[in-house]
Length: 121
Image (cartoon, rainbow, N blue to C red; front, side):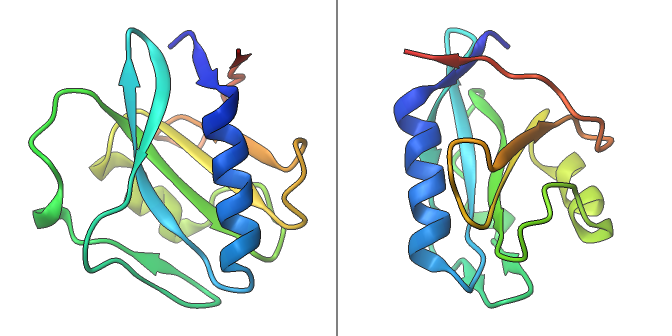
């Protein structure tokens, strides 16, 4: 993966802030090796401790890169629930956390290993 578009990263941080103190979750799509789009699935639910999406509402798409979700508690590391969720949805997983500044995000591999990701554009 080459990186993530700057405007998408800014959108993820803004969504975290807007939904705070609840979480949000969405599906990341890639275009030409760049994480470029977020899809929000119908029926997604969230509260202060978790966010859930319905896999049966996922688009049939070969460009799914992974997921993005927020941690209102500011912890920029995957929880046990995240590590169970990651393998179901692509290879790259972004967590944004409180206070949702440009420094408050991380990308992880399916196994929870941090993955440096360049911000493009």
